[in-house]
Length: 180
Image (cartoon, rainbow, N blue to C red; front, side):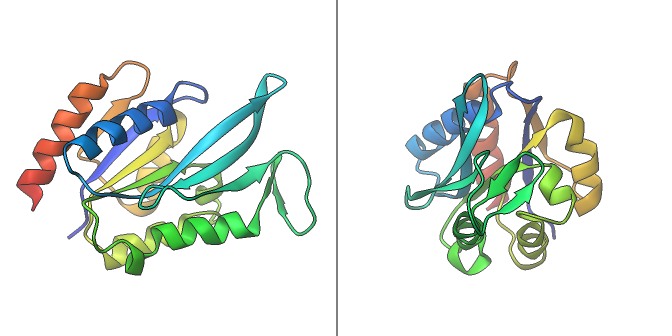
C-alpha cells in the first residue's frame, strides 16, 4: 500500500515553502508529529543565493546548496551542493529515523530528483519501506512528471498562492485521522 501523498505546488517564487511552513506550524498545534526537511531559500542580488535544509524532527539546519563555488561541492546547474547537506537531508528522510512521526515533508522534489540526484533515492526507499503520509513540494510545471516517475496518485494538491493554510490543515488532519 502506498502512503498518502499531499502535493504543495506552484511555480518558482510562488510561496510553496512559505505555505508549507505555515501548514507545518498549524499541524504541530494539532499535535501532528512531523519529520523530513524544509529547504529555506535565501536571496541575494534579486536571486536565490542559497538554500538551507531544516530537519523538521529536531530543528537542526545546514546549508544544502549555494551559488558560490566551494571545494568538494558538486556543481548542478547554477548551484553547488554541500555533501554534508546531502547527508543531512538523507538522514532526516531515512526510514529508520522517521518511525515516530505522523507526517513526512519533502521540500522540494524537482529537477535534481527527476535526474536521479538529491532525494531521488530516498523517495524510492521511502515508498518501498514505509507507509507514512507525506507532503511533497513540487514545482507546478513538474508535478505530472514527478507523479509519473514514482507512480503516485496524490490525495490532494494545494496551490501555494491560492490555497488557504487553514483549509489545508483541516484536510490533512481529517485524512490523517481516518488513515490511522
